[in-house]
Length: 332
Image: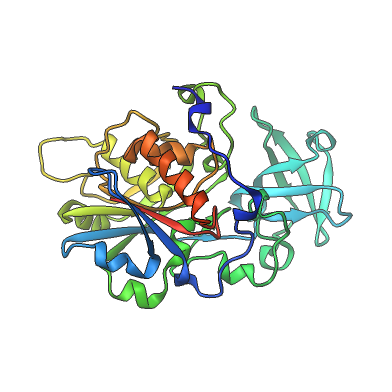
């Protein structure tokens, strides 16, 4: 199986560069894995597909305005990780200008390149803290073809976001309203979405691709609810990756349950692609993803590549809205 096996053609006009006015007004494609049936519904129909013992698990990470420009406008930084208030690991453009010892200022605060990592990231040490709310911008995905606007500060954020640290939104959760959550049994975990989730697969074969680590947290209470659930429905690929990372690393297979009953905190670089045996997740609510991406590979591992690509072709024909601000898919 090659990376090219996960390709599909998408007209540019189907890329959702802006959100709908109503979060919950999105369309929802439903894929039934056992029968291969594909339905075209609305997101508001989601509760009708749920059973009494289902548990939806959502990612409560909060997107930070991590894109920063130097005061002279010549250098762009993407803050990947705030190691401390004055130490940032960053993507830097143009990187050639920012070798060790070079400086820049953001809002009058001086930053110095202290280290260059093997993958090209830089460690920037500042002489004071920087207010990202004032000086930062949301790092909207490039396919939106626009810079962030003030409205994105609220809309490119789930209504339940609370743990700051993500560069990008867990987009499957953008459809939910407080009213929808109130009628569905749900639990939270945290994975701070980083660039690793969205970096393209440049390798010819998926198994040669290297994922970057992302930080996660899941409480013992959520672990217990996951283990007691009839079906675990992951809201998004980020939730899937955390649960499968924990399911794969269980210390003892004897007790019933999907993951160890304890608080969990760490990093994961799990890359899920076909063939893969799911250990913790039974169903998935997700948006439509880029061709040849790690995300469409994950969905294909759950639903089968042929069925997923058939569904994507049908989504194009039915004029679904694609990517972060687009419509969603429920895989049962």
